[in-house]
Length: 131
Image (cartoon, rainbow, N blue to C red; front, side, top):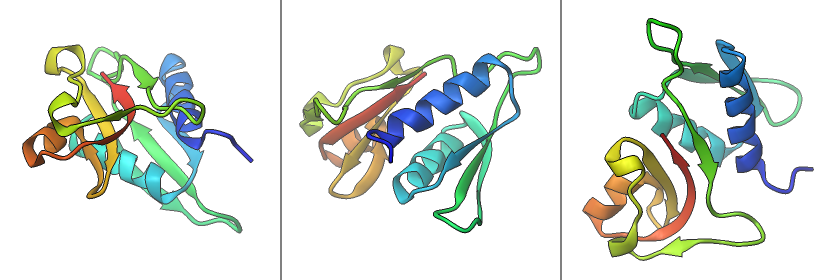
């Protein structure tokens, strides 16, 4: 059992980006699926899908690269960790790299980007930053 499945997801994506892999497989969960959905909507990944297996399923993420083989994701950082949770109010939701990146938060309204949290005036736990 993993202590921090979100950090594991980000690490698997980071490792796949370093070797310029087209796809990365991650053990599926509802939270990871919501994060993948946000990454797809924001244009950081090409696609995602759930593959059935005998356990919890596998989340397959298809990574996105520019025409000159550069990854569109240049950084992933886990903010709130199991040993140190980071919560913010609606007016303190962080911007990432001056608005180039996104912050992903888990809120009472679900998993949202920092931009949506600021618009809807809702705070929560900062999961990660992606730029």
